[in-house]
Length: 253
Length: 308
Ligand SMILES: Nc1ncnc2c1ncn2[C@@H]1O[C@H](COP(=O)(O)OP(=O)(O)OP(=O)(O)O)[C@@H](O)[C@H]1O
Ligand SMILES: [Mg+2]
Image 1 (cartoon, protein in one colour):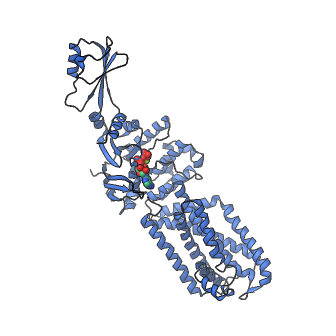
Image 2: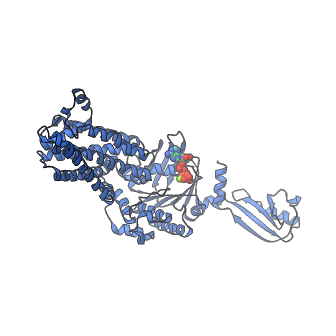
Image 3: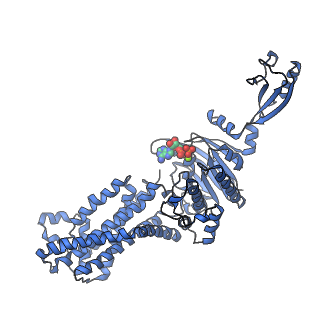
């Protein structure tokens, strides 16, 4: 293992984040607060309770997931796209680092940042609604696994994208709808039966469901199923990345 | 002694179907300075990129100090430093940070003293806290060299290190390259400035259309392929070359005061003796004479124009 290289890339990526620390933290905190005002206060006053949890508290896990997904994807995709775009990727490609090390460093940094943002949002949510976390260890596990999985997805996106439009559009066109339709703001059981079935094809449902379970002990799908599905997505992403590096797709001519 | 870099049958066909390298074989000796010359698009950067792991070769193999660049990439790449042709830097990083980053990337522990030495050698020390985007092009080029040297490579590739660099800076770089060679680093550079190859290289390779056309010791090359010119300054100007001298390969200068004789140092005989005799017989007297050897540049242009 080239530990020095992993550290170098990881630090480089975290320093890049550090330079934009203000945007990195302020924007998620602001948008979360807005969600609370709109969904929690305005709509929540009419819904009152979902599965015995106040609506304001009910949406907390979904909101955290929403930010976690978008942050993971955008951090990781930008992290690898930018050196490709500027050409500085040459140095990483010419260094004695294995593909695995490259992925650990880039994805690790992206996931770290996303997790930090997730925890900040959790803290922000605590200002609006009383929080209870029944299974903190599970919560962290879902947080970490989701951040890693979607950072891997972002990494793939950052390698696939050949312009800035694609880099921004995919999260907007795919991730956001999946997250919104994945039960961030409602319980799947509130949907008509047909849509409940459709929803089961949305990977984000499992993440949010499992995550919510770790807070309130209730879930749309069993927590084991959530965990298993999370690993399925994780390994699917790893498989794609392994293929990318094996063929040099978009990295090497 | 085993070569430090051994390239055999290396070929590259890009996805576009363009064949940029056609079975290139080349050995580089430990500690030499090798200049790779060739016109735009000859395949110089492609060759270097494959060796450094940036481009995948489509055939053949390369070893660095015995390590295969694919199977044993870690060992091979640890030995190599690369200064790319394009000026690519992270705009927001400082000089110090980016050079330290390179060292870490190549698996070396932090060593501020080494980074400091590299920066001082390249006259970058007073810029160490500057952001890269505030540097001039020549300074960025130095930063790229510093990055390549930060992990103390044994083999250094310089892809047009002095492109767009002023004369003073160029001499500076030559000095750095010489110092590196003195510490035993093997250097492979590409350049369009023949002057540079002539000044720096121990050996010269010429690549054209993806094929190595020639590899030769520099002095040997200049001696073998060099054409010499003998210029005779005449005592009395001529209107035309006299018929008695038509057999010789002569040119008359515009004002008729100089006769220029071009000959090949490689030839069996230079023909100078016969020429002088004929001049004597024809009664042409001259005040002075001088000989001139063609530069590497002229040799190079000749080679590329008529590929062997
Ligand atoms: N990624 C690529 N895809 C397709 N063709 C390429 C690619 N990169 C280079 N080529 C082609 O391969 C040939 C060799 O290019 P290369 O960059 O190796 O030349 P070079 O000798 O370094 O030239 P220069 O002196 O201009 O730097 C050129 O014809 C170029 O157009
Ligand atoms: Mg080139």
